[in-house]
Amino acid sequence: MEFKIGVLAGDGIGPEIVEQAIKVMDAVATKFGHQFNYTKALVGAIAIDETGNPYPDETHQVCLDSDAVLFGAIGDPKYDNNPAAKVRPEQGLLGMRQKLGLYANIRPVATFPSLIDKSPLKRDIVQDVDLVVIRELTGGIYFGARGRSEDLTSAFDTCVYTVEEVERILKLAYSYAGKRSKRVTVVDKANVLSSSRLWREVAQRVEKEYTDIETDYMLVDNAAMQLIQWPKKFDVMVTENMFGDILSDEASVITGSMGLLPSASVGRETSVFEPIHGSYPQAAGKDIANPLATVLSAAMLLESLDLLEEAQAVRDVVNKSLNEGVVTEDISGEGKAYKTSEVGAWLAENI
Image 1 (tube, helix red, strand yellow):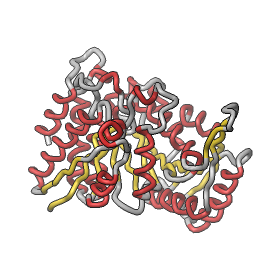
Image 2: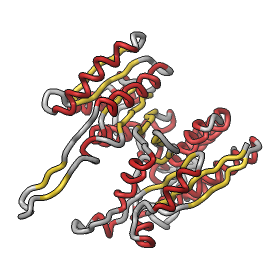
Image 3: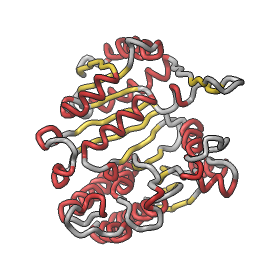
């Protein structure tokens, strides 16, 4: 089969880790008789540098024309350290989500047996953790009205949600739960925020459509605490944009490394697959960044194209690399630390 894949490597370590994922996808194509046609496009700081726009129209068209998009990372210190910058790399990410209608971010969090002792949490807490954080991606405070007063002594950010936005993300969460352990946790701050009270109101109505699935409600501060104390109690966690941003990053440390967690952003148009970590500019060009989260994101991409056996082959080879210690310095411990490119080549060879 033939597929069109948009490639948005982005900034920092993005190009290096995406390159390894492409090596693996090419090995999959050879093994299973497929053809992946890649089209590269600019996004983030590099897009600002070359076009003045963090998400150029040309990049958007590449995404629309693709069957799926493999994405690296966005961010650059020269913008992070300049509060006066009017255009920022992260605006490209928000623009992409908005224009492609990427209303849901799916982040699976599962522990790897060979890395359990690298988690900052005790073995009995993290062993067999397997949960999914589903984050609403195009509403809330990140997309609401914002600004500063004329005298610059105050600032505001507005959190707005509609019933339709809440309903569609909840139904997606229930569809995932139906294929898993049939448990949904709705996270909000309904004791304080009007937008959260809307979330809970809609959720209490939607849950009645899924009588075979257990639903519970949790305030976000309590959820943050319980995610560390009892992560195994969660199956599918669904929440609004900012809470999801924070909780999914918190959940990532359960595994022992942010460099191991993939994600998918799905919606009206082409879906985007990316590692959850940032651009890690300090490591850019050093060939030391962990590519496994990006490779696992490629597995999710393959799965979205109904290439289920191919996706499992990628997950299997990642598990093999972890078990055999073919990993980068962030998780190598006292063992040999392989280069980013070496890990990618090993994965491709072992496909």
